Image (cartoon, rainbow over all chains, first blue to last red; front, side):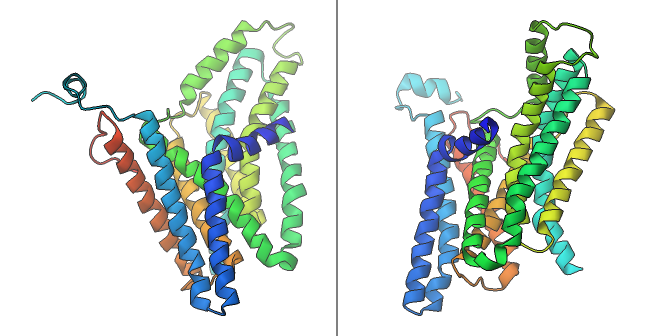
Amino acid sequence: MNAAWEQVYGLLVEDGQIAIGTLAAFAAAAAVSVLGGQLHNDMLRNLAGPLLFVLLMGLLLVNLYAAGRRAYPATPATPSAAGSSVPKK
Amino acid sequence: MSATLATLAVAALPAFVASVVEWVEAFTIVLAVGNTRGWRSPLWGVVGALVTLGVIVLLFGAPLVIYQDQVTQSFHILIGILLLLFGMRWLRKAILRFAGIIAEHDEERIYQREVAVLREQSMTGSQNAWDNIGFWLSYKAVLIEGLEVAFIVIALGATGGSALQAAMAGALAAFVVVVLAGALLHKPLSFVPENFMKFVVGSMLTTFGIFWGAEGLLVEWPGGDAMLPVILLGVVLTSYVGVRMLAALSPRRAPEGVSV
């Protein structure tokens, strides 16, 4: 049971941001699909698929960008900082 | 014939690749336990964990397969979300490892660490005597790594037809391959490109999740199943953009030609 809980915890809490984003993207796609159904508009309903793809890939890139920013915080371009990271010619 | 090939591609292959990654990680722990505390108890631990995993897959997988026709739409949604949660997680981690933001899994280092920890613990009796610690350590390692495999097997297997059997066969084949390789080499399988394999599985799970999840929302994809490789290509290209973006953020700029 502990092992199962660790898996669920890892999936929803450790990677919570991406899990919540995934569920939100799915909910948004579902809303478009339902709207398309209510308006009897098949084209709108079928847009939910590509929308889900775009939202998830956007989520992935935003999440990666945030992780990259946390790992490499932007430093002001002071002469000393620049000197330590930019190779001298 | 084409249906068989499709089942293999959709269920067995990702289950096999995902399982190889997880079984390699479990094998490292079992090898460390066996080499330091004797093999009898850890091997029983492996058997116990496999039986537990089999029960979990049958307990949760079988009803999903049996009743899927009665709950087709909500079923597709459930499976789509499950695949997306796993796929996006694996994909994200693999990309962060490619970019060097989180450390790559090093089986050799993990093995050495486990052996050092196990050698510090005193052991009574001979190497053939029953050893509770050895049993539970290997049971836990196989169960924890295998649970992710079990979830993936259930999700892939729930796509209908013979998919569950194909996914289970993929996972079992991976187990056999890892055990055979491990028995032959008798050392951690650190040559297995775990991160690349995780990336492949993450991409495939995300693709299937998008496809089936959208079908659950009554979306009709243009071209039907032919959209699967298109979505997969989109996922791979987005991942490549992600790796390049992280390389650009890095103060020590990654070398040209970073591969995903």
